[in-house]
Structure formats: C-alpha cells, structure tokens
Length: 226
Length: 214
Image 1 (cartoon, each protein chain N blue to C red):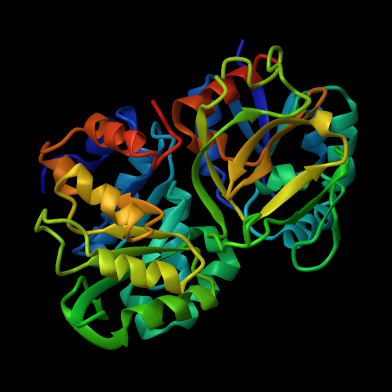
Image 2: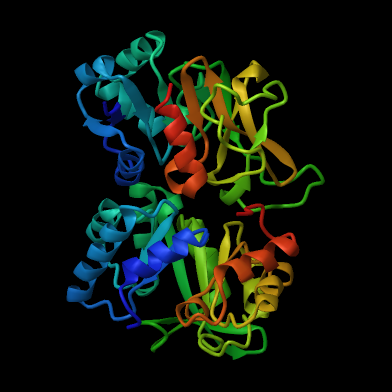
C-alpha cells in the first residue's frame, strides 16, 4: 500500500494519464467492495477511462463496478475457468468494456503460459492461443502482463507483445517491466503494442508523467500532446 | 441559474460518467426514463454503448423515438455521444440494416479492417486521437468546439463510423489507419460526438461547457 488510491488517480489524471487501470491483486470479497468504493470516489472528478480488475467472477460483479463509474473491467482467472463469461460480459455490456487480462509467463522459446490467480497458478493454456480464442469470444482489448518482467524495471517482454499483437485484431496493452522511456518506445515500435501500462515507475516517482509523455510524443507514438 | 440537462436512460450503458461530467461542469442532471420528460428538457443528451439495433429497439420500445424527434425539431440543444451520435443518423449496417433517428442525413458503416494500402489494423478504434476541422467546416467558432484547438486529442472507442451525406454536417474529423472518420456532427443546435467527451479529460470538459452555453 502506497497511499490513497483515489488521490493517486487524481494526480495522474492532472498530469495527463490517458487511462487508469485499477488491479486489485488481493481480490477477496471484502476487497471487492473496497474496489467499488475506490472507483466511485475516483470517477467523481477523473474524466478519463477507468478499468477495474481483480476477482471479477460474474455479471453482477461487472455491473457493480460499471455502476460505480468504471468504464471497462479486466478479467483473467474467471475467464480462463469459464471462457463463456467473456461472451456474456461482451453481449451484456459491449465488447468495449470487456478487457481480457493475460498474465503470461515464458515457458520456452517464443512460448508463454497464461497464469491465473495473479500469476500464482498454472492454466497450461498457451497465452497466444488463449488471446486468439478470447478475442473470438468478444474481448475488446487485451491487457498483457509479462509475469517474468513485472517489477524488474528491465523493459517489457517485446517478443510476447509482438506474438499476441500479431495474433489478434483487437488492441493490446503491454504491461510489466517499464523502467525507462526507451522501454515504452520498444514495446510500441517492435512489439506493436497499442498502449502501454505502467505502475511502480510512477507510484515511486522514478519518472514523471511529463517525461514519459514527452518521450512518447518525440517518438511520434501518440497524438495526445498536453 | 444552473442549466438543467436531461440524460436519456434507456437501460443500456453506464450513465454515471456522463452525469458526473455534466455535474462537474455546473449543470443539474436529470436522468429520464419516461418519454414525457424528453419534450420538457432544456438540454437533451443521448448516450449509448453497445449495438445500434439493440439500442434503437430499446428507444422504440420505450416510446422515446418520436419525442426525441420532436425535441430535435424544437431548436433546443441536443448531444448524442458515441452510439448516441450514430443513432442520430438515418441508418446503420451494424448487424443488419437498422433505421436510426434520422436527425442528420447519413449512414453508419463498419470501419474497414484494412487501411488504404491493404494493411490490417486494429478494430475497434480505441484511444486518444486528435480532432481536425471537417473539410467544409473550417471554423469552429460558435460551436461546441469553439474553445478546442485543432489537434487536441479526445478518447474514442468504436468499430462503426458515421458518414454524413452533406459533408457540411461533419464539424470535426479524426484520422485512423489512414482514413478520415467523422468525429463531431452538427446540424444547428444538434450535435453528436463519436468520441466520449466525458472521458476526454480537460478537452472533453471544454466541449461539455461549451454545449451548456448553447
């Protein structure tokens, strides 16, 4: 815990974040109510898209988060256990709000396994095949986290991003490993990521949003200048 | 005095963000799920996500379609957002041919999955993209875009795009995969935004503020 999430959200919004992603990695029943509360508080004065994820298992969970002000929800474990959930969410609320979260761990050369329960459990699913299948079921976006790179600050798993991005026709958000602006540029140029997510590089003030955006604009990666 | 904005609630989509953004801009927001409230509105907002046909069926089932058309003819300000903007057009090809509200002449079609040179690109078009003046709308003065600078980016999420029969109705456009896509339609005080002003940060709020000045 690094402080009040809603206060961080407001700060990132003011400094020009394009989107916010809340991932509740504890995802207990208590925590889910807490997540709803955080989203509700955030959505009052933050006017950019908000994605909420962690422990979502049912249409009711999705509805509660959307009502609280989330625009999209991210699902991993429950979708792997029951892929039809992807179609149910997409049909009920639209594909635009159904983000498939994939926690991918490298299992060989150009091979990755999709893990569940925040990277703790095996699914034995090939991450690229799973991305393709989920996209066919109605996922609108993929939040692709490299379990190997996450927290290392050594850059994204560019091969993973490239493999998934080439396999699906929906946008891919790269996550896990951001430590320098070059990493972001690499993820987009070489990995063909459509967006890049970052967490602790900002939470611990290792870089400012302004620095990151300036690098992205200079590299011609974004049309949003501030 | 606070401007009173009526947001149509027809059971699809999340109205929280839209309501919140208008409230933030100083308006009093009323959610309307009754046809009688439509014609009484000062400012009418039609939000929408999901599929065109389903949303039109829902508007028809609730008896909203005729009151919306009457409101539109009254000369009061109207704003359609995302699917709400697409429904302002005459028809759409999304999952079969469906009639729209016909407030603006034109048709809604899928964004082609390939660019002009045949390269595949991502659908839906999701993300921040700049607004540019429409070919026959060089001036944004006295419109909801009055305080927006060409090149300011806003947040889009869509797979279908509106084509205006009369290009003067296309107030702003954006570029995606080498194509110009309609971003804002306008006919008198009737406006439609393909993007989400309520999710487009300070630029989106400027548009909402300007709408409330109409």
